[in-house]
Length: 361
Image 1 (tube, one colour):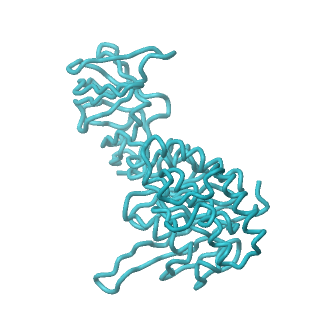
Image 2 (image 1 turned 90 degrees about the vertical axis):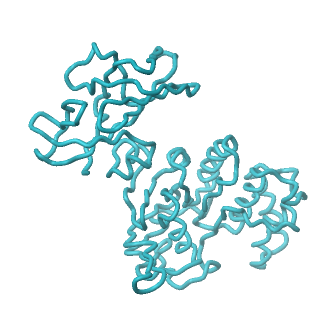
């Protein structure tokens, strides 16, 4: 673990807002953001394009200033401070490597600009190159590197000055799917090894779930939910989070005396104020498909298989008969056995205990 490790809060955002323009044309990119990012955690800002996550990253980094609110980094108010005066560094989406410099020169660039002694620069560059596993490539230029190698150079260059917070603005987006998956593990391992707080921006839910200690899900400039990956996936706070994180079956229903009444599905076990309009959220993998004749009280249906899609390690089904199509994913084979149903078959659904979340509509 790095000697940069601190205890407590790395970054505290209080009442943060950013407005572009004035009057009727004003755009509220961020609205009343209150977040605490802990020291030494991998923290992710997750949301669709235009939700404000990159704007928030730029405010932390000092590349932009808030319209209202405060930013404290390790207890110090950084209002008005430029990026170079903050204990923060950034890895940009396009890496921004200098094409005429070698790997070693790129990694040591910031140290030279800071006037560090030559011996310190040489030692730090060697340590950073080893950290990102680029030994033997020190004399190559960016056009001689693969996408993954360029990303490692960008990471090493950002880490070389010893920031306490590293900001990462969708750094995996330019990589192919297989390399992205491998780099997820490498990024998380790098964060653990250095002990530096990582603040990671992405629109990719799989990246967020795989790497993060905590996630802030954003929409329209606001934080919709903050929590550990398991908390956000298993207990979404609202309809947007349920749909954005992993996808969910979102079923309109009304709370009755015996549960939630969903058209075409019967009565679903649920609690709430009688008469309230709600949304039932159920993850596709937490449903089992059964032949219609096996339906029991509490099961959903009857339904009909409208589509079966082979996905390699799983089967995906689209079922009709309710007010909205329902989606189910079933594993293929293995210890759990194999289930399969053909289009046109009459079926019902059984949810795992605790799988049905009742959300306000």
